[in-house]
Image 1 (tube, rainbow, N blue to C red):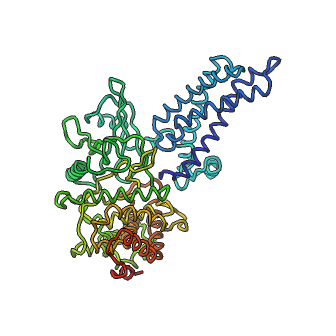
Image 2: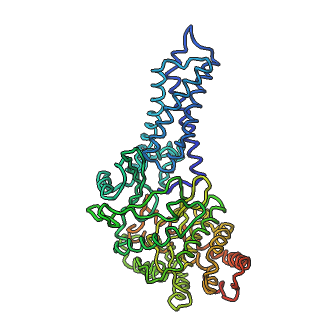
Image 3: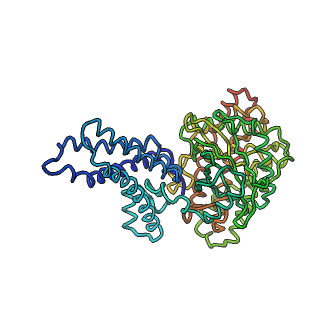
Length: 562
């Protein structure tokens, strides 16, 4: 399941508020109308004020404790705890306000029962909705689908669970490792305290990730990130972890971002009890990292300023890694960003057609084949020595930057598994592929897909302000083509995985990889139309930063043929 965008989260959050208010109002009527009926009944105005007081108390405390934010962001046990705390505080506030206002709130026992009912029934609504959604999706009941779509804005076909799901049973949605096994793994690491919470973090295509909470004897809460490494993608775990430790050691205290804390701008490893970097057991290979509090990530930019800051962050990462020798970092995935090689792999998948899916994607295959001559434009320049090989992040998606919840500035860069020798053109292009797309990465309505040139300019400016001075003339001349190359590559990879039976990327509904591929290819087509504008944008930035490069001299437009 893709997380909702910021606007969708806000819409769903207020839909939750509406339903919770209705629930609270109905419970209040059930508990207190009988008490205020008959000869001794309170005036209608007092009853209305009493009901409004109850409603406001519960809603306000849920907002103060950010209950709805937790529901829609994490869906963890913390959301349960916050909802319980909000109910207790609301109960106290309700009784106090009623007392000060001079109208009866009812017996204490009734008030306590009222508060408990508000909490329990709200949770039961969400649990019931969870199973109704699962039933509608699995069995395909048309009436139930229609009801869910109208009442909860849920699109059963796309996998969007709408407004009410995100509170309960988060680990159960995609969990393949028994929770007891996860706890046994956690206890093999050098953690502080005893485990009190395990929550699966549902973002990420490759590794399986959990947030771990512990409580020490002194009452201190500690948090960690536990990851099960995908050994199908990273078979050489020793090399992976050697790279990871080298990179984090190198950057710790050196890479600083605007909102970095004393923990640094990268996550660091927490060793096992016997001092190893990772754990191997029956359930797989596991590692533990420090957890960074009060941060969030985005799949797409929520503002141009956010994307500008992301460009600066990844540009600074490249600059701070520029003094690392390429031989110090091992290549974990050979030809990871070799687009021409990826096209060759696609052709092999087409020939094998293991799942009989080629017939349904002939249009996409033809689109890719028509551009096959362009796919080596960066690879060929690297192999010939025209472009230098640098140590790059190789997965510069916006969601690999953590932002501070208060000032919305970058705190840390995460997901360092693909740090290895490559070209910064791939990093730059990957950021543009994700960040400038006006649609989600699995959008079914391709008319929504386009490249936002304003966002392109913002990211490019931030990126080049940080690392433009270390890039060569050849790199800068090919930079306008970077987003075209990497968008082609990801369209190829998603298409290949769909043909192969979805063996590489996690999918949350059948055909999602095909939707992802179609989105990338539609974005590529739009980028091709806007290549002239991109050249103009970058030339202006080069001139502003006094980078002595003329893109027209490099024949940039002529190097990409459609």
